[in-house]
Image (cartoon, rainbow, N blue to C red):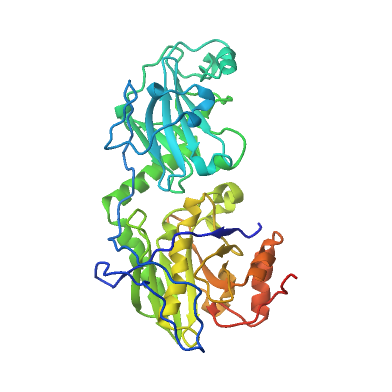
Length: 458
């Protein structure tokens, strides 16, 4: 897999001392050290402080659309426009539910007219050219036809499902918007639709990254071009996953899960690097709660994220299939030699982690070994950061606590030059080759001034 290079645009890091609420901006300016110390290229603006949010968003929340198309202002999170309508057939009247995912990259909607009801996931503007709309037939509101509803398809109208695929052959009652509940997968790229506590449909997240339509409907008994049978938890893994994910959201909604995650990770980090000296909230006041813990150990500043591993990253299930548990959850770390950089500058450089933790879900992508990430807070002479667990020598590697059955990976971030970034991007294994060159030249996960390990292009 070729290393991914993403520019992170919004640095944010607010300081929270242990047991206290946020007390002000940390990075109003960079404090430059002596000339012998490394410095950074730019300063960041003051940051707004906040109290981390412990509850997930959109829990049991649906946007309702009335017959005349007006929206409840307390719930509505964005208007539909004609450019988002599938083949021009969707109207405000037929849209009965709309729920954005956490990062507002995708929108789940339920469309219902006098003939049928469908569940869709729409990419938002940023991703519309990259990903297709995914749809799932829910029910016929007219008797099921004996043959495929080709006339509707030719007219661009949502078709009825033919009788041989339907659980109910007679017309079913219209869905009551008040009974609908959309729950997004924790990876933020798929969703399940519940109706008065019963699972109605699932559109799995991995289906976003390939061309075929993949969905599962409770009203279907035989696979067809519109959907496939949902079955039960014992016959369909996606049914079981939807139930598990509903329990996941319930547990987070209860408010105690963050304490467990925080305690487990802090115990792991402090066993390795000693007591945390500072603690930074980096979740922007939204779910999931995320933070950075700062440590001083044997002359090195360590910065380690907490909370990124709460959610599996997008795309990983599609790319790695049964190996996905090895790659879908991560935390990030940064280590800076205290002799080459002041604490202020080290903290400033570590603010890159606060940019990176949101990227997988904001960009519907994933981060892994050998990927590179551009950042404006890299030290002078460097342009990006390389992610690599294997930068740390074997004695310095350690195991993170499991999350939801998966073992997260700790990826160390180290600055790289523009030439090194280009080298990492040049071929599928470029990031791994760059890591090997850095190791061969005597470098490890602790950042210190060093020579460039590749030749610059003329």
